[in-house]
Length: 256
Image (cartoon, rainbow, N blue to C red; front, side, top):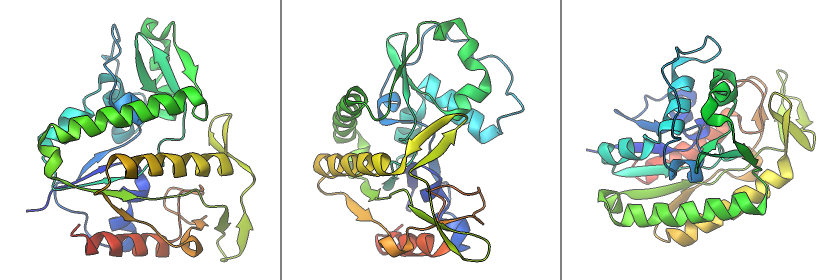
């Protein structure tokens, strides 16, 4: 029996519902994190007993707490997946170095109010597009590769969903528009489309070197167009339906 895990973002999780297919049974989805945070130790002294704030849905809150508690890897190992699909679209926000560890500086973390906890008192930002963050990411990739080789995950088929931010989008009338050079990430945080696409190419290249047997799926550039009618709203990584159909058909060919 196939057991599928997704370590990535909604661009992979949404493949099945957007196309109109039932997702794989018992699909494990790990998101709202970054590889350096995934491989880090829990933040010491953190009080996670507060109730979920209204600003966060149950899934978003669980993902944020999991990033702080560092429980995702144990869940992945316990799932014993036959296939693991990775995408790096969630690798777009900064990291926080605090308490001798790293956490993902996500919208969910800010909206939770958790950063008012004294455990975050000495936190400092590691900018996503900085050389330091890239070094941390590559070190975490090496640690992750060693973990996979030493656990039952070594028998899983690894699949990389190569993705890029769209530079154009269609509106409700199918008219085509260009995204600005910088787009909103959350709040007042913005990101350069070109810079993040270059970063994604470097991350994906490093992943392929670390896992030469991994397979890849991707959509042609002509399908890499965002859709203002997307279920989650307009974003450079919320694509037109044909994008999802193409990638899902490639996954099916790989046994997913």
